[in-house]
Image 1 (cartoon, rainbow, N blue to C red):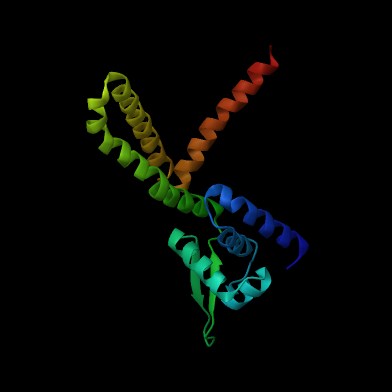
Image 2 (image 1 turned 180 degrees about the vertical axis):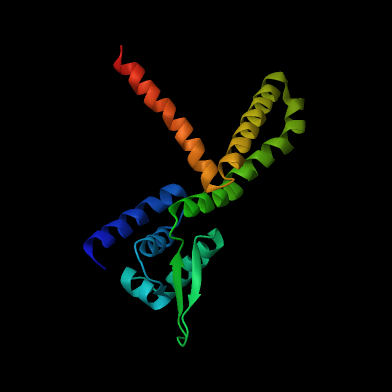
Amino acid sequence: MDSGTKKFVDSWGMMGPVWGINASVARVHALLIASSEPISLEDIAERLGISKGNASMSLKELKNWGVVTLIKEPGDRQDYYVTDPDIWKIFIAIAKERKRREFDPVLKLVRESLPLIEKDGALVAKRFKDMDELLTTLDTLGEKFLESETVAKSILAFVSSFTKVAKTLRGKK
């Protein structure tokens, strides 16, 4: 592995836990992102200096996230792996899975708690109703954002236009 790829893989691996992803899983994905050719399980383990078991579990997790695909080469018994070349598809797949695993359960918990919380007084009930309203709004925005790469790009372009306007306005003061 060249030094640029190694630096990317190691840095991506260190950022993984910040995003709620195991460091080994993040490093395996980074290696696949930085590779133009499919890579075998054995090569992944060797290049990253991890066990084949760790590499296999990381690949399984990445397949569950929908960001890695198993490739069979004709006449070769080894399994090879690739990640989607479209970084937007990877981003959307990861965001959808994180929403499903992390955000949706919180929204469900708040909604299930509302009837119980209402008995604890007006102030607490209002907090939970406001939280439900906020989370529902974020859920609606998230669903729209995650609809497709085209929608996500459009929304980000729209939002980024506000930062350009804000910078222009700050410069005129």
